[in-house]
Length: 337
Length: 145
Image (cartoon, rainbow over all chains, first blue to last red; front, side, top):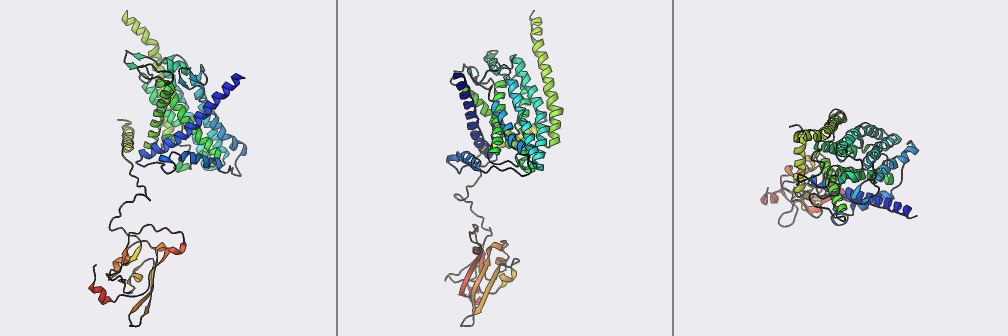
């Protein structure tokens, strides 16, 4: 009984985090994009426009649940949940502190990437089921692009995984404590800078952020796959998008920036979640910054960039790093002797 | 350098972020209009508060959109009397040709730019009604154009 309650409480905490995050990030996105474009952003509802998102949530909740007549009802109905559920599940292995995690999985990193890989499936499903050419185009683009960008995303995560020798996020974060030579924080971003750049670019594509938002592409596809959705179904998709942003940023923090740990000083347990979320939000800010700065790629440019640049670079880096990690101790030992 | 354009773009947006927004919060704050701004046509009056319009109808003939019309009659002294000077602001394109054409500077392009109305009929304005037209001789004396 207590186990069941504990599991329920953990899921409740995950859901609460996801919802609060969604509301926060939507407000943050509007404000950040506004300021990047020398605008003010929302400022009418509540002080500094803080209640704008709440207002929008209420609007979405009370809207009629519409479905086009010619839509494939079954697929149309389950697609938003297929997009939402994986991004909800991906909160499972996040490490918020030394002992603060929903589950400590030995294959946590793999699980996150496996779950986020399900999102394009839901997007394709939504695009197909809507029976609209814009939606279909959006869905097909998602199939072509997001699935392609999974490959460099996974490969770029391999570097830190090799350095930590584990797929368990807890172990990966723990391996980044302390310093190199007494003053450089032991964050994997320093030796893995190439992997980090690849990770940053492909995570932007994976979360459908603006330079790579072909499947939505407001100006050409009128929000693409989400075109025919409204009300709660649309907000599930919208929420999943922002929750994915949080997840890729959190994973990036864990893999490359030492997770919940402060550099140089020991982190008290109560401060760990704050540090982790602060780092994650810095990552999200950078994603929004890119979103406000860069125009959308062309589809063929984006595909060739993935297959001809990112994948060879990340593959080469994995091979190179494997060699370095294996050979360096041998070479050093030989030199020292 | 390959990719330097992206870095430059990021620098520009960050510089924008650190600047204060240029947004003018319209109903509360307003920009001052430049002197030559052209908005709704308005009649001008002399020192005595009488309209300067002589009912010569040049503005009516000049208007490319036919938004001006003046109904003129004779008064007891045999002078012109303006029954109604009608202006359809909803159809006006604020070109200012009527004002340029007016030989007596009797109309002007005003700075009234909040022209939205709740009633369709309010888009047709009566600028002058039931008033004697200025005699051209009097208007020439006090001409300020």
